[in-house]
Amino acid sequence: MYNVFDTESEANTAQEIDFQLWKTNAMLTCNCPKYWETTTAWATPQQRTDGKWVYPLCPEGDQTHSQEELQDDWFPTEP
Image (cartoon, rainbow, N blue to C red; front, side, top):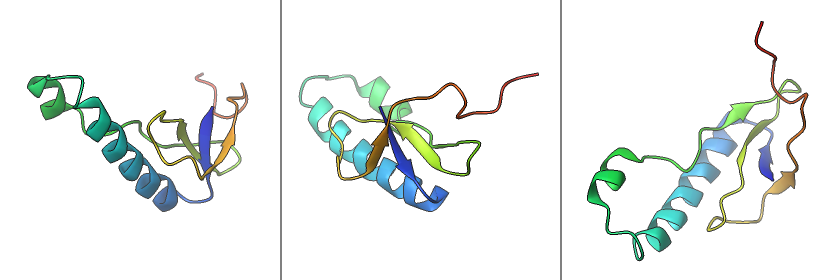
């Protein structure tokens, strides 16, 4: 499942909130300082071919966004 947004700004803001929620919970079970020094996001939002912005669902995140299953035609194909 992916969270779906109309704008890049909306996707980035939601991803930052999801990352903080995930990090807060994950740090309780993972004492991995090097991991947390290098991990700065849950996922990088990507733009679909229809102009929408998406990133993979975060299990610890805010589940109030529109969600859709990944489709094969969402992203441009590599030549």
